[in-house]
Length: 99
Image (cartoon, rainbow, N blue to C red; front, side, top):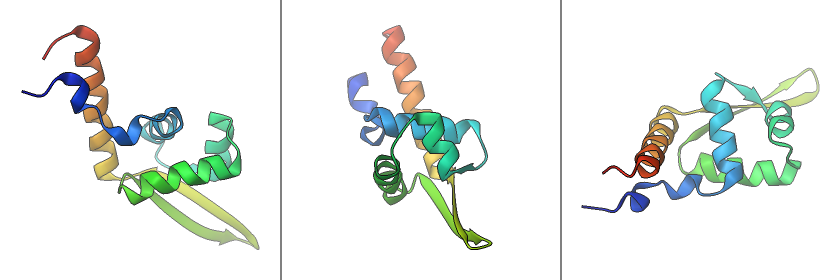
């Protein structure tokens, strides 16, 4: 049997990615600026971490224009919600010291 530490999802090792997923789990959709403000990140930092989560299939990105301004929103994918919940469950088990 795997040790609990090996059941944690490496995609959520970084605190920014963990924060992004936490915000997306609590909200249906979140705009780029809302997510940036909620996590106190720079544009580039947020973009690179969201890109990694999108590549993993955990985040859905919707880009559109509102008037002449770009508007990007994010939401957790079904796979992302499941993977994040599994990660949280593994963390809880690790904290309790149970298998």
